[in-house]
Image 1 (cartoon, helix red, strand yellow):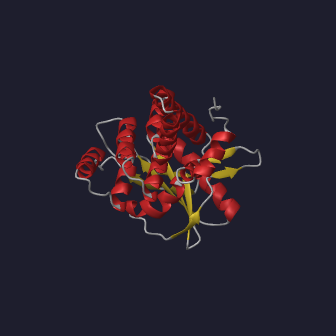
Image 2: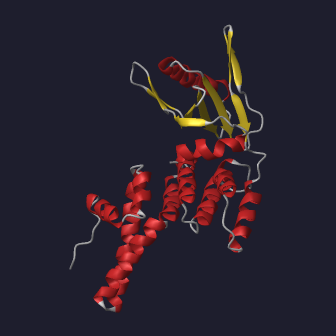
Image 3: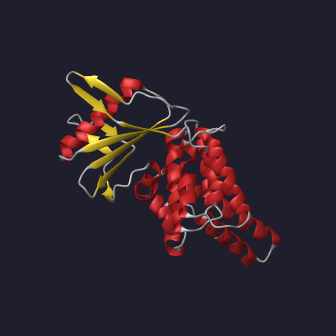
Length: 279
């Protein structure tokens, strides 16, 4: 979902207006079965691949050699031209983007995000949200990219703030933006506790609300205050458990589908063994 959203919605933000025909592979296998993982690739309608890498540090020529391998393998396996863009974050404003090896010069296109002010964007969108004004597609795109822009705050803080703004929007485009933010969190948040905290905030989406409401309903059926509280607690536990399992298993499409399909949600709860036995 994040891959598709990046290609169809966010590319124009970087001044890239190539029509996208399909997503491209992000793995390239060598004869040794060593997998080289690329961040994003897209096959354009003109028949070439656009390859994207996000970098929060300037690895210099070492990183360029790695990207060159990715590009060469994809070119070799597909027979198509490959163009590599490096999106620099983390305060990088002037990085090495090409190097010479023998008679060949390998060149990439650098995109520097430090000049974009994430704090101003977040404040503007918070003000818009406070007025109950809907977020436009451009707003969602800008919000999604705040983790890789310049800021006084940590990436965790920016992702957290963006997620909070998205929680009030139940549209499909909002779900796509949420998926992109989750992808950024997986890539940039290295502290496991911070990542779990972010996951917890992301869980309270339409799916989480549905399971929570189901827990309330179970409590009302018992007709007792204790039953209502128990239903609430069961709902919260199911929210945390099911969503975490789906996110950990990278089942974002199933997470989205379960938000509007109660039968499928029930199947997922049964699949993971998360249903509370009836007393």
